[in-house]
Image 1: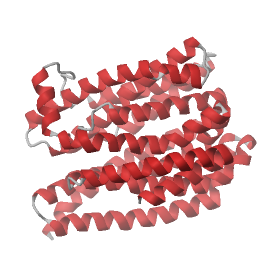
Image 2 (image 1 turned 120 degrees about the horizontal axis):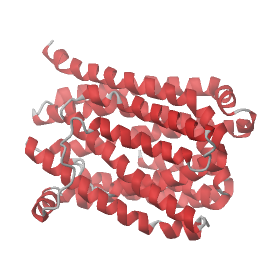
Image 3 (image 1 turned 90 degrees about the vertical axis):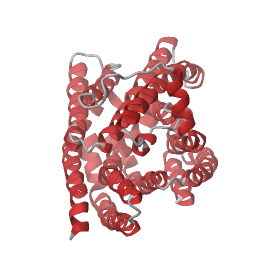
Image 4 (image 1 turned 180 degrees about the horizontal axis):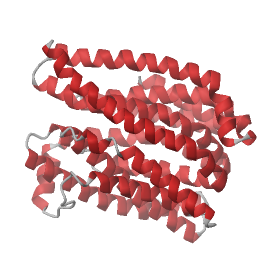
Length: 401
């Protein structure tokens, strides 16, 4: 009975965050077709490239030490580490924005202004995503779930209102980009109501202390985070490079609804990281395993349902949302759902490994993933276009898991 009472608050927290996520995803599903028709596949393809580059940058801009927020022993230590992470992230994102300019200018063949704008968007989006993730970890540690549950609603409502508004006003080239950035900024501001007000730190001693204390995370978590994101984003980047923004836009349109699965898996699992860490500190192995078993059962049931629903209704839903022009690509939906489920399983394993301090194992998996992803992506994407992305992901994820 005592164990049930310990676990039940965690389950209530899952329900809380799930409610906000479901509402946010519902808003996204309703407004996505309107936004896509207003802006067109090419703009969506350009954003897909910006998004992929940004996600790689945000994976490395914290030097891998964000996980330390869950491991830090004192409240003062958590606050200091948050400021160190924010400062390092800002500096690396600014540097990354300069470094990615040649990619947009000479590989994507964009004009100078567009290349500069897209590089700037990478800087801003990568930093705000990292801030959202860092604040999320901080708030999750202190169980501020009432704040967290609002994030998806704030984000998706902001994107919908501003994206549609800009399109109505005639700004169908940059309006969507601005709307997405505004969604991230307002989400961060919502979280900052509880997170420490001081955001940056420029005391060299604090940087040295944090990097020394969490040197294992820097040595192993940092490269692993980078390898995982490159693995996930490489196929999409290759589509954009080989076949252009419009083709990438169609692929991202088909793939976007599958993100509901990944967000749902994260929503279920993330609130349970703190209880898992608590069980480990208490040396309660049975309680630790009980939580993992329950999560595995729930995830297995939801995975089967997701595949069945996508197989039965996927084509109908995509055509309803994006009209007939998407029909030639709807066959990709079920394989994308399966690969998304595998990504979710893989992603949920890594926080467990971090809690267990099995960081070297994560790095080994990451190295194996990037090697297989590079080989599979270059061969499959070049030969099979959008089909090749799915083939490459399934091969890579199968090897990693």
